[in-house]
Image (cartoon, rainbow, N blue to C red; front, side):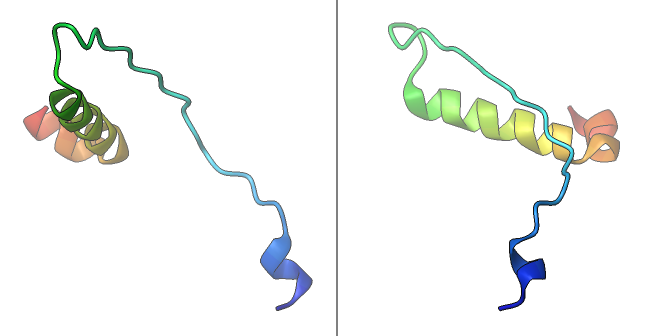
Length: 51
């Protein structure tokens, strides 16, 4: 590959941390919630219609 394949490129990123009390919330439910939050943030137009 060329050197362009290894070039650092800027990206828009939002570090997001979600904490769950596993005594109250099951890990699978927490993962579904986290995936829904990600989906809403990745598609703001859809977020306004659904979320």
